[in-house]
Image (tube, rainbow, N blue to C red; front, top):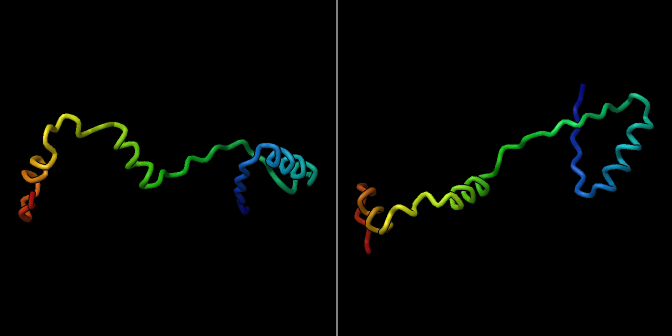
Length: 75
């Protein structure tokens, strides 16, 4: 069996496509399955930014200087 996923941004076009597929009499199986796609790195960074994880750090430059032991950070 081959699975083909078609994403149609326009709801009216999607309905037309579904009606066409129904007329193929069993050649095409339709499911209402919602597929969860992994989020992009941008979506993860945006979620991290929105959660404001660094608001408890008063001076982020000082904090970063304390964390980075591999090289001297210039202020």
